[in-house]
Length: 165
Image 1: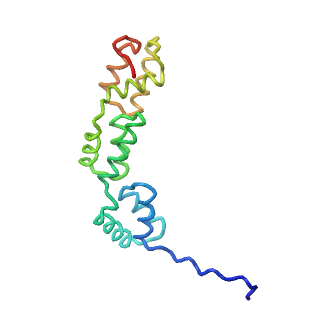
Image 2 (image 1 turned 180 degrees about the horizontal axis):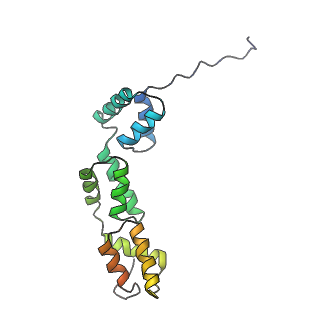
């Protein structure tokens, strides 16, 4: 059945290594993410594990590097350490690597929380306890610890000593 058009050869399915490498080219990924994506693509567990191990040995995949990049990105977006910790944990990163990534941020969490509060609510003072609760819930959802939230929501944001950049 030739109609004069050249036929294209069938596209060959990439192996697990090439598929994982292609995913890493787009963005940094945790080993767990890569494994899940390779499993969904139909690769065997052994083939996926072998590919991920090879990528780790070549330093193309690093959970430590992934944790540092994600932590830096989330902190830059105004998220607190608890939220960053939980997100990294969901990616299969070890507690030690998470703590190292968060510790390497050199971030003033209280100042970051204050900035988020001011950005979201402006400089107007807290009107009542209901408003104070809303502000506290906002900061807690963003991942700041209870001590920081308490200190900031108990203080009047509009105080001259609390100037924002």
